[in-house]
Image (cartoon, rainbow, N blue to C red):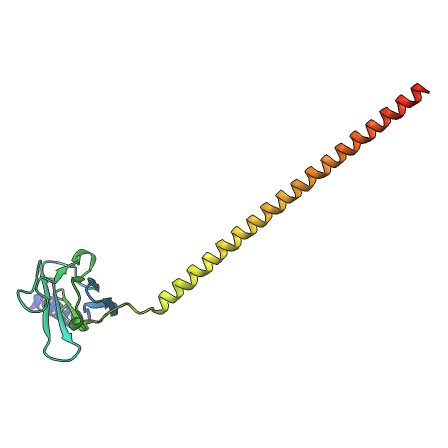
Length: 215
């Protein structure tokens, strides 16, 4: 009986250490943080995560909404093995599951955006025993038209530069083509002139020989 006590003490100590270390692992959430979309269109609210524990049937995903003008938090979407859409409220028939837990994706699709959809959307993922972690947030701005961002200006600048390069190449090719054509025309005229000159000299030589013979 006493011989087993040290082994039990070691196992008990190891269990306490593992219990103390386990809460260190937490679910990490990744979102775009800021999203801008045009009124009346659809938007994908992207939310991905990483977890120390393997993904299983215990995984849950909860989406909530905080209006821009304040007010209570509203339920948007819930996932646990199967997706659960809201049965009432502003998001009824306007939200669908677009995630894949096996790929650590907890994204949703929001349909027919309205101006009162402006606000902060939160994505919370729990994957027991990983239930701690920072909740992901996306600040959605629904606008009449999309404003040009730095990326659009950069794409426009790159596109303009590429178009300018194409125009320059076409101009250079055309200039070389017309130069070659002009040189070919000049060479052809020179050949014609030489041929006519040779023909004239031959005629003169024949005339002079004929006159010598008659004399």
